[in-house]
Amino acid sequence: VLAAAAAGLLLLGISLAFYWVPNAPIEGFRQRIFYLHVPVALTAYASFFWAAWKALRLLWTRDQRYDLESYTAVHVGVIFGVLTLVTGSIWARTSWGVWWTWSERQLVLFLVLFLFYSAYFMLRYSVDPGPRRASMSAVYALFGVVLIPVSFLAIRLAEGLIHPVVFTHEVGDKLSASQLVTFGICFAGMLALAGALYVNELTGKRLDERVSELREALS
Amino acid sequence: VTSAERYVTAAYLVVLAVVLAYVVIYAFKLSRLEREVGELAELARRKKEEVAG
Image 1 (cartoon, chains in turn purple, cyan):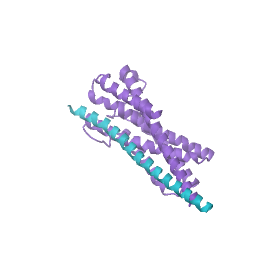
Image 2 (cartoon, one colour):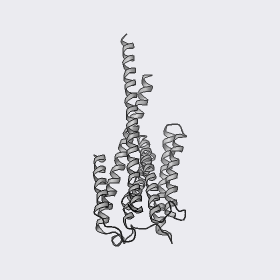
Image 3 (cartoon, rainbow over the protein chains, first blue to last red):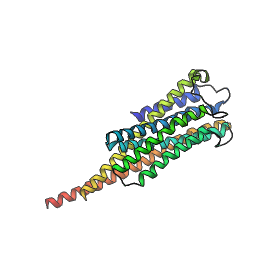
Image 4 (tube, rainbow over the protein chains, first blue to last red):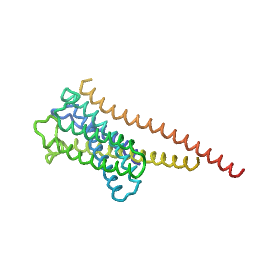
């Protein structure tokens, strides 16, 4: 259901972005990356939040099933993190003329967030499976979530930036109704896609675990 | 085709490519799991025969 919803919403959103939304006054045609890049970035944040929520549940209840759920959410978040960096880089190239700029705090903080969660896998696989690894991974995932509001707010707190700020209290002045509707559909589609990936990954990882248990029981 | 159109198309294609790559990787994983479950079923059948024999 989630995969079908994702496919439908994303197809609709992309069609609207290309055939319904008019060219933006300054950005022109290239502004259409907005309907891809921003939903992908927000979905990465949502995945990391979900991972932190599952990590918190693990630490609170000591129920080991949350470990796999948190790990899967980080996995999905990192996939969307890669997409955020790549689509952002393409947008930067066409808009600013460079693939990357170190002077933008928003970019650097997102890279730090991405690298932090990429290191999660190194930590996880450097410890033997069990409650200790689950607790360490949960604490790490919880620490990472602190970086999300910092990354999100950095652009609003900094001065002299070229990265655009769209979602403020004046969003109605910055985006037309057609742009907002298209963005909403693309964001819903991206969340559904992340949900579908999360459910598939989780099912696959649980199957892996059960196959390993069966192998041990039979050998 | 303008430069902006090329870059916008590239951004959308990158996302599509990543999703397709994920589907391919997942298909490999499913076929591995299917093979492993088949091996386990064979192992269970042999164990059952040993117990019966």
